[in-house]
Structures are given as structure tokens and as C-alpha cells.
Image (cartoon, rainbow, N blue to C red; front, side, top):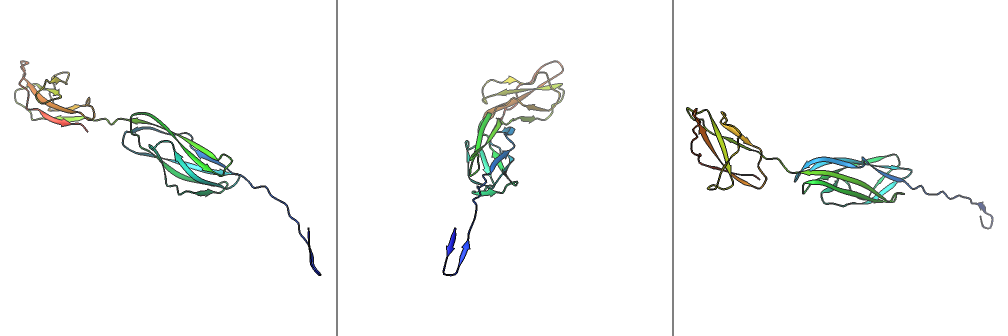
Length: 202
């Protein structure tokens, strides 16, 4: 092509270059949290990498409110051969295996990159620690538990215990228990129940 003027002739030439479309990758895949206590939060990192061209990530969507992407200011661009790291927080709301995913929309060839997420919600383990004053002329003690102050009580130690402390590890969250102890002498005679103490398990 030529542009002509009164005394000017300038040749122009050029060639088109195909634009390079990048590829977005997310690792590790899948992201596995293992066991996490219900109501607490565990955080793991993910790394996003671009290859073949610039990748601009325009949005990120989580399939579950229990998995949250942290530290990402959208949109952002990753140059080819470079990577960016972010955190994903997992806060289980119930027990059992929980799954989700993060979807990243971008201008990459894989315009919807997805990261699979999984974790196991576990219920917190509670114990009740009891202690009492020692008695004279006894060989040990028994520990009893009930679910009401004036109701029936069941012994929860398997044999007479010479210690003045006991740990009950069979309690259930959200329950209230009543504990009482008895003393046993060398003849096997058992005293009456002590005054019950109330324990509420969170």
C-alpha cells in the first residue's frame, strides 16, 4: 500500500500476529484438609499459575460457604511462567465428609478452572475431670453419674478406685450430668452418695 502526495511516496507493510491464549492451573489438586473440628477453621494454601500467555482471573466462586478463598483481590493478572498464592479457609459446620469446589473465571483457554476441596468435620471431644477429698479408713471410691439431680445414678468406674480423682470421657456435647461419689471400706461396705455436682458439657 502507498500513500502518495505531491512529492512523497512511502511504502507501508505489516503482518498480523495471532494473540497467545494462556492456560491457568491450580495446585494442589484436590485440596484435602483431613479432620477439622466442627466450628473451628483450618487454612491451606493454593497456587495459581499461568503458562503460554497472560491470564486475567476475573472472578472466583465457592460452591460451599464452608470453603472461603482469602487474600485474592479480583481481577488479577498472572504473567506466563509466574504464579500467585492464596489461602482457602475450611470451617466445617457439621460432622462427616464435606466437599466443595472453587471455580475461577478467566480469559485462559480453560476459562473455568476448578479446584476440588474436601475435608472431614469432626465433633469436639469433651471430658469431665472430677476430684474429691479423701476419707479415712477406706480402700477406695466409686463414681456415679445421672442425668438429673434427684434421678437414678449409675456407677461409671469398673472397680473400686483408690484415687481421689476420676475422668469421665464418655460425655456427649450439649448434655448436663450429675456426679456423686461413695467411699468403700475394707469390708466392702459402701457409704451413701455424696452431694451431687452438676456439670454442663458445651
